[in-house]
Image (cartoon, rainbow, N blue to C red; front, side, top):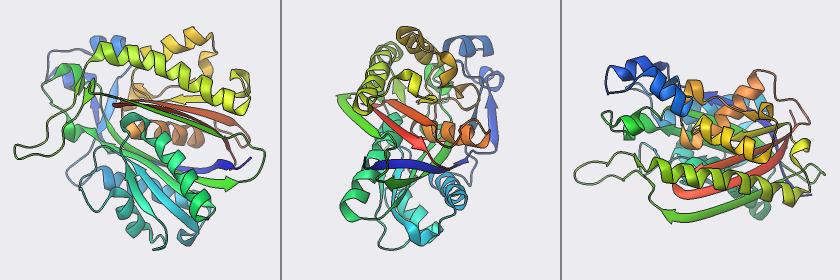
Length: 316
């Protein structure tokens, strides 16, 4: 089976940690209100010298070092983000320059919001299959604190900044691999781009997003399981986009699944959009919970609206 295997991860988080208590001094909210509705307790915000690109470079450098590969062995670089600091050069091109990846290595950004890392993984697989090469660098990075209205308590409590990176190897082994992607144009989640009056902040229809997410998550998981012929018992981990603990808990009950398989870390990161899945993968690897030979499903859902799922194996 031609597909990708995960061989290394990396991560980067801003030094500043923002607690629910701190936010409660800025808007009419409380730690209890935020925690019970979202599961979020803290999140990270970029400082003056940090942005989505600087975080991406740090995460990518760490993943590359852990892979044991040289920069010249990377055949494509895909970065998923909706909060790039510049229209051009892309974040992926900034990573290419900083890591001294070869000039023959295509580098591009993907904006599929919270599904971006899944879209990026699918794009990397397609580029390797089309152009040749064995190794791909896929990054998810965000600086959402720059896109928020700090006075809007319905959104400012949700989002955080961070980056995660993964090095994938294209293989012809029997390791399971599958991807599914989807989109339905809808502005239930909206973040405007630059204009003469500045960027418009993130807005969200929370109820509509919840209804969408609890439908998209199990459907995406079911589709990649069908493609690989696996079932939930064959998976060691299910890593979903870390938007809200209630979304994941709802789907675990709906699937009658083992909640211990569904990794959650939004309590200390919040919603980091395209970064949430690779940040979670990196935490699993760093903590020793992600073991060689384990099979992982990753499920993304969010702005666009977009959704996607992937199944792959970890080969350290």
